[in-house]
Image (cartoon, rainbow, N blue to C red; front, top):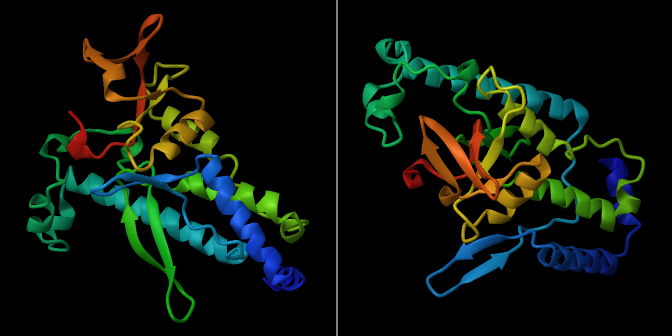
Length: 261
């Protein structure tokens, strides 16, 4: 942190403001935006880009990483129990009405076995610092979390605009996110499939996070599809291609449950 502070102090304020303005223009011109739909029109916006990085030390990150792993493990164990033995309800830890009265509870999933007992494959954990500087979890998004593409591209932007700030600092890379995501999705394909076909299912270009959908599909090297591109035959999902139907083994869906047919 002291090194970053020292390097920033050598940069004139006017230069920092100019680089910040350049970053905003580049992000917009590269299409790194999210769509805001209002009653009057649809507007593309960039996520706020802060040229002064928020520094997290290796030791602090190790603590956060362990906590996040623990958290997603606990949530998956909770969901497995809810859809199987329901001990947490019988023991009175959680009132039954909070679970069975929730609109997102799916009775069809009772007793169903899922690969690795994993219900949440991608978890968006919103972290904040409290007044004493301690990290707290604001909320968990286990449905269709978005935003990681902006993290990766913001890192690229910092390298381009502030090479003097980032030089010779050992940063943990975020460039391999697409490959890690492909590994995770491929792992839940049917066991007999050696080279699984993974697709990313998007609502389409009018969705606010469509940039991220296309971005991740590209980084993963998989097709970006919409509902009209898929068909179910013989209890299997197929993708329409120029060469006919192709079997789909894994769907990374970026559509909320309520909008799925």
